[in-house]
Image 1 (cartoon, rainbow, N blue to C red):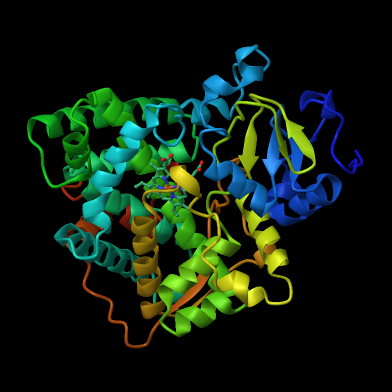
Image 2: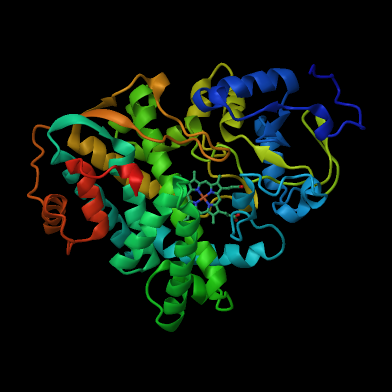
Amino acid sequence: MERVSGGYPPDITLESLTPEPLLGREYQDRPEAVHERLRRRHGAVAPVDLLGVPVWLVLGYQEALHVLQNDAMWPKGMQHWRARNEGRVPDDWPVAPALEADNTMARGGADHARYRTAWDAALKPFQDPGHPQTRRLKDNIRRTANELVMLLAQQGRSGTADLAARFSRPLPLMVAGELLGASRAQSERALMDIWRILDAGPDSALAAERVHTAMDALAEEKRRRPGEDFPSYMLAAQPLLTSSELAHELTMLMGMISDHAGILIANAVVEIITGDGRARASLSAGMIRETVNHVVLRKPPLANFMPRFPLRDQRLGEYVIRAGEPVWIATAATHADLRSAAGASPDRATSTRAHLSWGAGPRQCPARELATTISTLALECLFEHFALLELAVPADQLPWRSSPFVRGLRSLPIRYELRADYEIPSPDPSVAAAKRTASEERPAQASTLRRLLAGTVTGTIDPHSF
Ligand code: HEM
């Protein structure tokens, strides 16, 4: 449909525009091409069909900033969605469960402030550089990253591997256990269930139930015996949180750390290897935080934010958005807009921290420092130990996930070569136990998770099967 200069007539609604489907092969492989086509046709805000449901997609940087910074007028919260309230969104719409999740990311309304205060307070000890918790967490990230490299090294000093399965997904997940203050067995069971959920496998519904039950039990435990961990800090900040409410937040924390931080690490590796050279240049210069900044600008992990719903009819771009229509921010598209606005001096856009990868306004990500720390330490470890890291498939054949929320890989096939001075440490007892278990089919005494990871190295376990 051609764009009408000066906006559409007021009687046009989102449903009447018969928008083009957003998700599909082209969006999966080259989302920027889809964004550009939409921008040419519609301007800064485009109607799209999201798996059978019409929504608005914001492609313009200024328009996105306007929505994000005006939370009172453009709130989150499914209760505001007019079409859904009128029964026009199918009950089995696959995107609904994520939007209806009872957690801080999805929730709108006055209650949000109570949760947000608790999140900020509970994350503070892990994000404040002078706090002993932050130092302990960093040591743990380094140790875990080194352990994962060591497991990979046991496969050979050079070879091919799926770096997502072997490194970028397990690392943040393993770190999450420490934040939760859970026992190793508790966190490893939950971590493997989170993997099952993230891969949307056949047993993901059962896995989700188990995670919630486990997090509920953990919340109860922390209420009885508080420790130096996220759930205890959250309860200290908001003692009236019920265990079930806290369990929803803990499940979200596990998901955000594992999926989003894992995606950031993998996207960073891809950008460093295949990008325009800037990520690699800042890495070589030791400016690792600038590398991560560059990566989130070029390959933002959260591709489309949770929708907002205007409380009144509002002009945005070339359209009037009706009260209660869903508006999604397409992060990468807004960054492309930011870059083109920088025009002749693209460097300005590259080094600017004005990007929207962590959101903007009152609902901005409270954990950006934590996520940045995990990814910078992960990258430092990788590029310290490997002399060579390159894609094992052409860049245009990387298997991107088809997701309405994230821009991440299903797997990251790489060719690697360890540095000549890297000494492969002797395997720890859990690895030895894994090898014994694989050959003798006996239950191992060792940590289940490390056994599974070791199994992926010895080739006895398919990383996507757990
Ligand atoms: C690379 C990693 C991450 C990225 C790119 C990211 C990005 C974002 C973005 C863009 C938002 C705003 C969404 C919106 O406005 O709809 C957000 C919100 C949020 N993030 Fe993150 N995030 C990351 C990691 C994490 C982690 C590890 C945690 C938890 C430990 C976390 C907790 C949250 C929470 C609680 C919110 C909701 C804040 C609110 O609504 O007030 N994020 N994140």
